[in-house]
Length: 398
Image 1 (cartoon, rainbow, N blue to C red):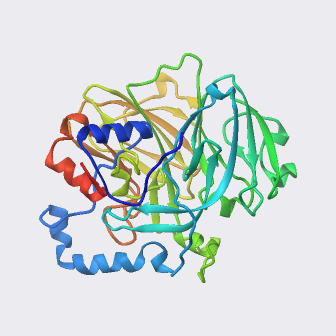
Image 2: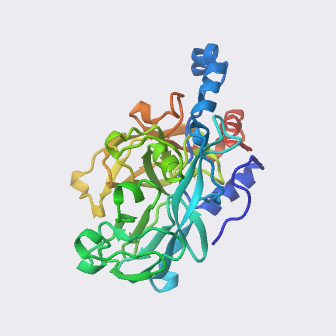
């Protein structure tokens, strides 16, 4: 399914429109706190220097920091593809795109990466992260990589699944890569239930960091879905790499990588709040909630939920035994690690943050809050002024 419309501007709508927009994206995370406003406790602390801070952000964010501009198309929000409906067959490719970390109307925006390498399929627009591929355990998959749209070699590599040597997608050990103008089909069995990460494994230090990552979810036979389910891909970025790949005169070395952007499903807060461009999770009281975290970045993140304790039920595709589970509210997630948490939406109804507790990861440059903040909102508070204020920060008029 493709997504139409301009993904750079402000969109307006009713509560019903918000829910419709969020449902169209699938159930994923809504950021739980935004940039401070004058008059709030956080805003008061920063209000004296707000004008200077705004100017600093304008000078720092996006291609303005390097003078790099491209005419690539913009990425669109991630879509979900049911591989069961396709008999396990899919074709994927890569397209150079621009990618908005913050939208034009969101606070601190616009801020964009002038070039990313986005996954797409013949049925979907390019996105970062790539499409969520969902399949049932036991399905034999045929994943064809078509490299007709890009000028660099690529591969398809997936974690967590047992496969043949030549279907591993690692050119160093297999000697195989998909050159420009060629295609290759990987035959992979969905033999391990769980949440897995896929990515390009050619020159991984560049290709993964340019956006070539996504989630492959293998549901066990007889999977019992919760009331609300979210897939949150978290990532850190050094925006100099994007500027360099876009042709900018930028001093960048992987030995000197210093992330200045942090995202949930490809967006930085407060753009993560946006029901069409971000990834909102809306719950009702009593809902069972399951969140699948995938770390597609290079740094570890300490993911924390506000006012909702949880248990970790899966790690890297393996189910955690009941006897080993215990209540937590913050967990470390290492690079390439996947963890699934479960809890009940039983707190006082409101808007709650789900964020990295390495506080410098919850910033946009030197501006707090921002970055790797997702969250959860109860449907019963969506008519409140505070919820409307959060939506305004995201550039969406509720």
